[in-house]
Image 1 (cartoon, rainbow, N blue to C red):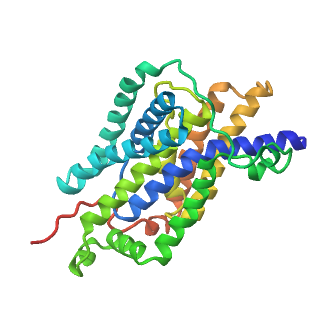
Image 2 (cartoon, rainbow, N blue to C red):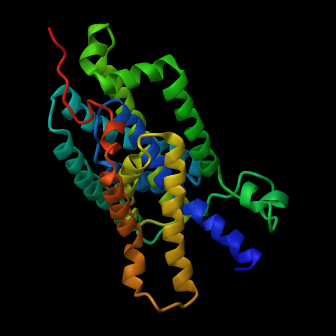
Image 3 (cartoon, rainbow, N blue to C red):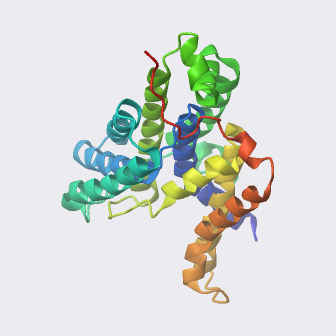
Length: 307
């Protein structure tokens, strides 16, 4: 592999990894609070279609990303109301949110099929962004740098901040946190809203950067990979970064193999590789005796404040 091809490969890996990383990071915070939201795929699709629609109308991708975050947050808050206030089953409600997101995105995106927009450009000047070597560091758009910055911010928040300690306490023992005066429901609402915003931004990355166009089910099941990544990372942000880029490599290998005309492996198998890798990773983790000990103790359990 020559230098140009290697750099191109790295750039593609970063682009493929970024939306999964954002969605998984949001879900990590949600699960740290003790809530299991399986609606990541639906929230990503809501963010993808609203971000694309707003960008098509305004010509401002940053506004589109902001709207994507807001609309996905609203979808997440529907889930929060049903599961936290009405104590509905979190697994069933999360699956319903995914179905809702698929249907809503198809409806809203019907009028934007065939539209195209200008791809969001790099943050740094062309001298750096287009340099044959330096573009590996300086050739990315603002969302890529935001995703990496958020990894550091979430890692610091969970480990060093008082608010992060409270969130972790709520996820480990909601009754104990409630008994000393913390609002378990309030903390979980905030975590779910954050998870929705991150999923929305991740979804908008597909329609504003990677394609850039609208098509039904544009995220192609990447929300499920994001969910698996949280388990893969053992609920640790920096491991999540490594896991996201691992899956980015898997997805990019598929593209480069097809582009090179390699036919030793069936195209259908190559397309399935990210999902096969997801299953393999989860299976390996399940064999570890200590894997279950990493999950928040109250994950998926409903909470009703005592009177």
